[in-house]
Image 1 (cartoon, one colour):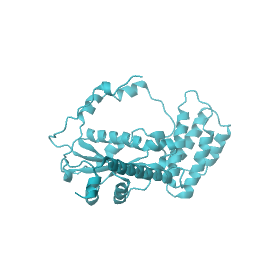
Image 2 (cartoon, one colour):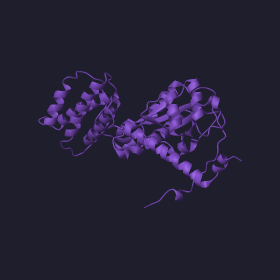
Image 3 (cartoon, one colour):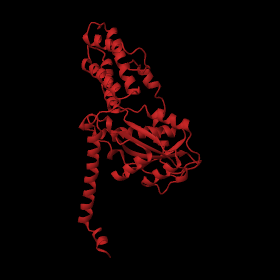
Image 4 (tube, helix red, strand yellow):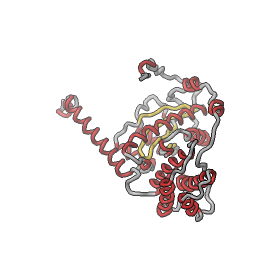
Length: 328
């Protein structure tokens, strides 16, 4: 036996090798954070996330049942960010329109409260005069009755959740575009940190790229790969606005991924999460194949397809609730 093969089995060498891998992985994550978060080199995407953050704060002020004058600094920031955005690009995307609509809603709120004499109201009114017409997006707040919460939620949720299982064999038909769009529309209702909506869903429809992506998946040995549709879920580090945000991407990606597979299930489409525990080099390679921007990080791959008439699934028994639940 070669010395190299012997060393591979020595506990100390194994631990040392793993520690080096961990340090390299964390260094890669650190560099991604440092080079892409909202306070690194400015671009229109980061400005857009900043607008969304400020608008979310403004909207919360409009939900106050005993309102007082608010948002003076927020509206100043939004106006400055809109100007910066216009300097960066000619695009008029969601965040830009959201900012303009937020300012308009702010004016309407102040008019409702008879606060038109305030300096912030006058500043916003003057700013918006140069914007004659722009696409309407709902911004602000509205009232909803308790009955609406309850009546719209009347489904057997426990039964629905219990009916979904991870499946690894599918019909040969590719998932229809309207089903993909419907599932994503449902998943987009997922809550996100400060409404930043930092996650993206990529449907790998191109056959060559689908086959390439499958090579990076872990645990695909029991799948009917020819029939497997592939989705890739990412989150955007450009949305991070504090050091504490470093875990937000994983959390938000987990939320939207679960809602997405549940939405697929409601449309008769089975799915299975494919762990993406790949190292930073492999992630970079896959992102290049799929043309995923540098600021985005891959969270998970999802295999999916229409249910077969019969499926064989593992029991995957759950722990006793006593091992999960603690009352403090």
